[in-house]
Image 1 (cartoon, rainbow, N blue to C red):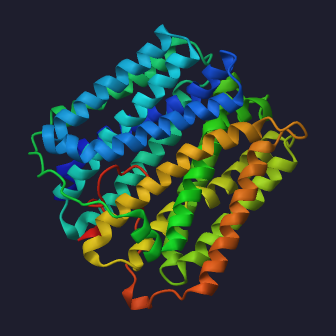
Image 2: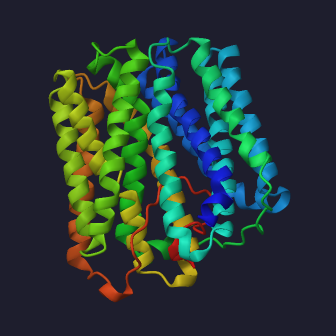
Length: 412
């Protein structure tokens, strides 16, 4: 329990961040749609956020080294909170594009500060349980956040105030903690070619996780407004329900799928999860007029498959790495995921308005999930899995870590 007491402030800060992030994920695309922006351009703006995140992740280590965890977190939270309020002052797509890039970098800096701090503070024997609890709280907050703005208009000032409030509240536990700051991170980067040669299946899985999930979740609020017209709370209420269904599915399936991957080839588990996601996406793509209950069930099944295999891909790469390389492997995979997150939203935006169907968003997800299933089965046939005794146990891993894998118990 001592380890939990040492880091409760950091976990509380992450929860407030995800509450704000969940709100932004809903009101930003809906607000842009209200401003008359096409789904294709909304996807490009979402890609701008991913580019900002990638730049923030690249610079986070140097920022923490220069200024320390508390200052980096505080500065990023202040910038992010101010940028959210600016969105109400400048109801303009170009202004929002710049703001979303800044927000991507700020969120990367905030998560980098928290997770580096967690990794250095928690003892190795408790790191797995604390890491799992941290990621659980963060994902639950991400599910809850959109419900604070359900029923409000996308351009109403109140959703943005709620988001700014949560970002400001995230400052309190970090700034008022009595715990000392940890040493700055020193992790070196790994060349992407080295990473691909080490674990090509993991690189493909993580890249497609970024491409599929970031693109689909970026346009999901707009899809929900069309597919769930009877949902209480209007467009924001429908978007909150859809996001909650998808994230809850991923939350439920994450642990059993990860644990099962400790006993069989992880690539096979990724193939199965992608196949499940592909089937659900195909149903959503081919039958966009399903009743509300069935759409929510299908979204939950899609989330169970698609929002849970990132961590399994990370574990597959770690199985093939030396213990001294684990932090660099996780950092490299985060960048691969970020590249996929840059490419995915524009593709999803283009697919959203296919002339022959209203389900283009999920038809694209179904195609890409099928590609992932086939590629994992092909890689499994080409290269044997490592010996069972050489594998590191799976651990909950989400693509939020912006510097190193030091929070993960496998990085000792």
